[in-house]
Length: 451
View (cartoon, rainbow, N blue to C red):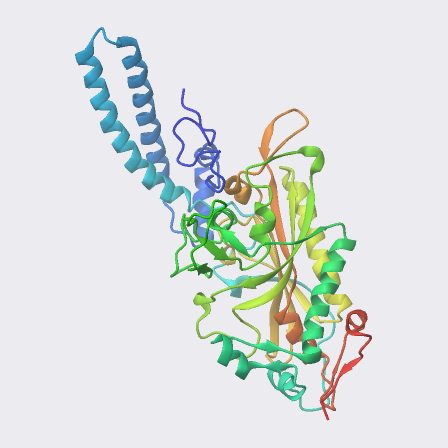
């Protein structure tokens, strides 16, 4: 009998291989062919589901032939050597054909998206995202305003010129009270997450490739330097025995891969769920897909700090909807504590990555840009990431299930920093410090020009 369970006798990716799982069960795809094809279309993914299912059928037929040939060879033993030899030759041919079919099958399976939630807007790109709500009043200044670049330079808290000299394109230094302000943002968000019941972690930022593949940060099965906004570390590493390591290492663009991969290859108990985690990390992004966009200032940079939150939940869609709203509520609370005007957007299907079931963005008002700028994003992946990372749990009936995974940006360092400098600027050139951040800055109320 051929098993459809991942890790069967002829898997493409085995369950023992962390980071080598499919994103959707093939049985689900067979039963929901039209819905999967529609999801791919709405997410701008080039996927031929009919071709995938045809390959699946051929693959299963070959597996049956190979299993039958092996069984028949055992029966024949030494009694009929000629027939056994013929079966072995047939099996070798089928094995070669299966390997080729598997490669094509795998390529298509990697493209299969999560079907978005029923209320996800249908749209082609970010222009079609839907505004859900707004909070706060856009400030009206009675003086000539400045952007964060000019403010940062005049207050001697930001140095882009020396940043570019030392680090290259998009390099920067945050200094003096600016450095205090940025760290205050991180500590404020980190402590907020702990208060909300999220277990804090400082996570690795140098990662193996399975963690990035597993969480969907590779566009395909392997790292693609032309498409993936990730830095690969060229320096050779050594293993525990002091031998040259062949494992490739990468710099994480967020704490999300480290947090979600923490339980990779493990089985949890249902009583442990939901697991709420938050992580602080430095983040690195090549931004190769944004060449020419937001080239000035801190809006789009190669490295920054971030506080990320994730939840590992049981396989209950309704429960994950509530948990996602919990995450969004925390992000809204942080913006309101900082008194930053913001709007909440629901992301349309065409602006969602393959694995997302539902997504929301928060955008703060940035006077220097005279527009809203993304400062947070909350996503529900259901079991798409958990299948890749092979994170399961045992329910109360003893059944093994994949956990559902959610993530949210609690606080990135550059953009809220921009929003504070620009929204809190004063006529005399100073910047008022939001009240909730003052305890982290020696009770400093204003950043003023140096005499």
